[in-house]
Length: 122
Image 1 (tube, helix red, strand yellow):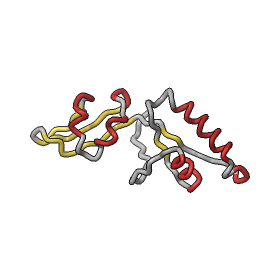
Image 2 (tube, rainbow, N blue to C red; image 1 turned 120 degrees about the horizontal axis):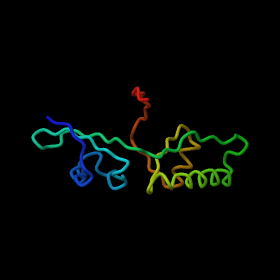
Image 3 (spheres, rainbow, N blue to C red; image 1 turned 90 degrees about the horizontal axis):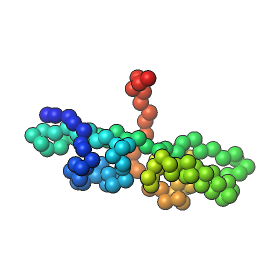
């Protein structure tokens, strides 16, 4: 068994694997795909991604449901996203307000649980 990082030219090897559908959206400069191979067969993979992420949505109760506030907030945030990401951004939704905004903007719900891990880096 051998663990290694796939070169971007090899990403097509993941086409039929769980990470495959995400691969066309990723930039090699922001992505490392670690695989474990057994006699040349990929038996495991894990992506290490630099991801632009929206977090911490808050709208004062008096202004919730105000389309202009939501639109202004998200349009302003997306202007900040563009220099950092090609064409996608991650967004977590802890409540129906964020879920509704993201869904109306074309967000696709992923069947995942989210975690934060401290790895002891500097």
